[in-house]
Length: 146
Image (tube, rainbow, N blue to C red; front, side):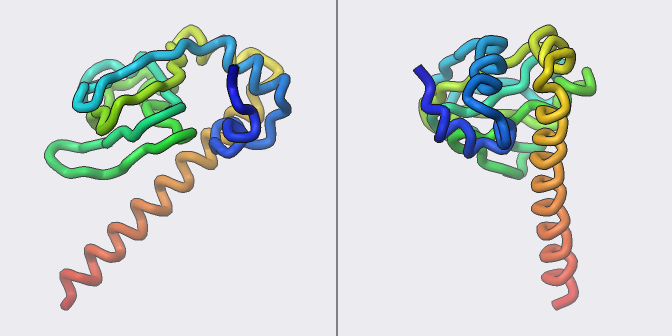
């Protein structure tokens, strides 16, 4: 059983009713990854979007750590939605339990009554990442000036 109040904290489920969250959850499958296991590799086809239910996932681009995904954060959405190769590698830092949505499940979700809210939530996830990236770039430029 899922804790809907905790799931609602996830940007990807924001503004959903319990019934809408339940409908989305039924499309996904739970996957488990041991700590240290690679979930996907940069350059591979993007076949799954994930939501971390428990644990921590490290996202790396080349040899650079770019993000850490914790409980109720989504990752892997860009390559899955755009059907492009992964732009980064995801590795379980701790044991991870995640909800995985394959390409078919994402397509069904985009045809469901929850589609508009799902897309708005994905936009929010991507906007937050863009803001973090912009801040990182600004800090890098500033530190180079010194």
